[in-house]
Every structure is written in structure tokens, then in C-alpha cells.
Length: 260
Image 1: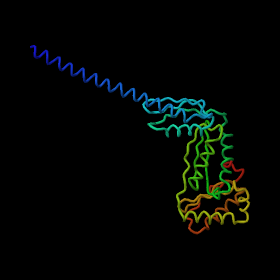
Image 2: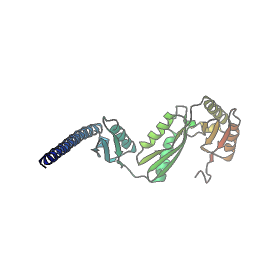
Image 3: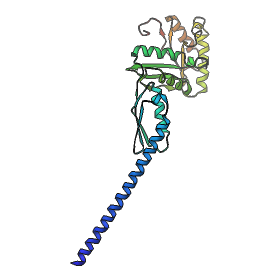
Image 4: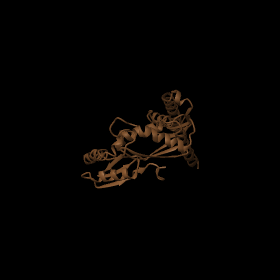
């Protein structure tokens, strides 16, 4: 009987020792995690030490950064996210920052952005080969269409992200695949279209050309022309380019119901 009691006491003591050891390890681990969170929070706060982030707040939990508060531009929200992600030991970022700034009605905002995009990258030789679409709902801008290259896409997204009144950006822009054949067709189609006497006027303002998108030999024409005859001539000229598989003529005639 006495031996049994002693055995039970030893077993109980061992269990208590294991529990105390586990508690000590958990306490030490928690303390270490809290210490690391404090360090990460300080690092992120230092990275966001800028006037444009003055209303941004940083919180940490188990290495995950929580960003809250407000900024003036959507681009600032994205920048804060990137800066937080690049800090050492950060496991993730939950970006709940809201974009403040002015409130602009959707129609006005879309028209302003469309005007800005028509002049984006003028002088780089790729303007006519970019065809972007813009949708705006409650300040959220959705970009679509096809860009000639990654630089053209990045420039368009950056322009929109930095425009006052934009609350969020949905980037659905596709980049045309790299293809020497498509490059040849682009240049040949541009020469054919703008080489037509009645269409040469669209090359005068480099920001408002007939847009020529080429993907795998398929040509899409977009933009706005003065009349149906110009649209038809552009279609005929594009179809006459050697190597073109198909021409999709999405040109709109100024003043038409669709254009409005």
C-alpha cells in the first residue's frame, strides 16, 4: 500500500514537472513572439514615417501586420502595403487602409482618366498600339484592354492609382505577347492605315490615333473616327496587310449612339 502511494506521488510529481516545463516554454515563446512583434511594429512604423502616411496606424499579431487609417491617394495605400511586406520577419499584411481625398462622381472621374490615358507615353512610339478600357463605379476603377508591353501597362495603372478621387484599382489589362511577327504586322498596319490620305489626319494628334492591337496575327482597330467612310477605309487597309489573319473593327463613329 505504501509503495503504491509513493509510486503515485512520483507520477504526480513527474506530471507536474512536465506541465510546468510546458508552461515555461509557452511563456518564453509568447514573450519572444511579443518581443518580435514589437520590433516588427517599430520597423514598419519607421518605414511609414512620411507625411502621406501620417494617418496610417500599424498593429501586429504573430508577425501579421494590420494597417488601418486613411491616405489621400490609392497609390499611397499600395505603397504602404509594399513597405510593410518588405520588413524583416513580416508573415503577412492585412491592408484595411481607406482612401480619402476628394469624392468625384463616376462619369466625371472616368472622363478625366480617359483623357489622361490618351496622352500617356506619347512620344515613346507605342501609343497607337495600346487600347485600354475604363470602368468606374463608386470610385473603383476597372482597367481593361490590351497593352503593347509591360511598361505601357504599368504606366497606365500608375497614372490611375495616383489620380485624386480613385478609391481602388482593378487591373484587368492584358499584355500582348512578345512576337516578331506581330511587331511586323503592327508597323505594316500603322503604315497602311495612316498612309491612306483620308486617315492621315488621325496621326496629327498622337494621343488620339486609331488604336491598332495585334495578338497572334489578329488585328483589332479601336478609337473614334469622324465618319463611317473613315471606319470602312481603315478596315479595308488593315485587311490588306500581309500576314493578318483577321481584322476586328471596333472603331466608333463620332456622334453615334454607341460613341456617346
